[in-house]
Length: 308
Ligand SMILES: [Zn+2]
Image 1 (cartoon, protein in one colour):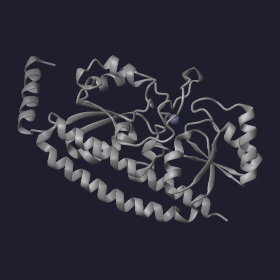
Image 2 (cartoon, helix red, strand yellow):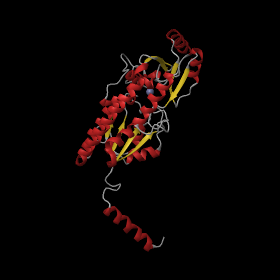
Image 3 (spheres, helix red, strand yellow):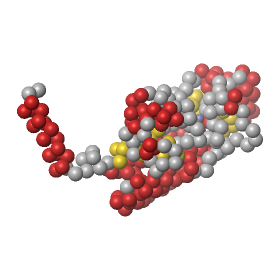
Image 4 (cartoon, helix red, strand yellow):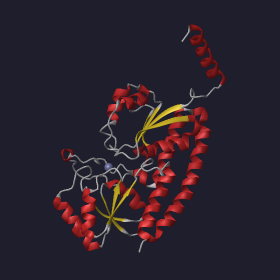
């Protein structure tokens, strides 16, 4: 490029930056560990935030590779938002360390653990034995699958955006109220779809589904992974198969990123079916945001249990 063109390009860039205030420059950079969190941040932050998710909805959020490109995202973040309860313990500390960004270190305003806002289920009692490799040592971290927890997550995000960007607090409050209103309407719709199936018994592969089943009144009679993150023993599979037969349980629910070998084995014995569903935004193409994730899940469950 000739020197004149080069100087000309720089002048145009600065003219644009000055003449369009707010274009890219004023946005808060938010890094969310999951697409579920990113979706809620978009609802609350609107045009004032630029949000990027690390784990894709079709990936197991327990097992994400700590890539240098993710460290670069953390390096540029004004706010890091994560699910907590050790969901991301295998990779997020590495991203924070590699990101070398003092704004998002624990204890700083740019560091937000959303699990502080919710009441976790399945909190272990007694002594923890981590040598067994249990990936839920602080309780079940898949709490976004209770839609009322989605509201608590949104409130926590709004509080933090107020603190980081007080000049726009009113906009964040209005966005939160719009999210709350829409979510409450959608919850009524989702509950109506599944009301007739309360008490239906299910088996799940991983404990991912607990919050969803609990909220909509399904009964989980067991998990194939009886210790989260650890493949089941043949003894456990035999016991679970017996319970399925005794209780007439026919359906096994499984997230779409696990191998379905064990689920198919049990379903075969029970003459039942394996339902493979997304558990996060982005898990299937239809689940484009937090609302459509529940549209997909409640629709699939309604269809499955409506069949004669
Ligand atoms: Zn888990």
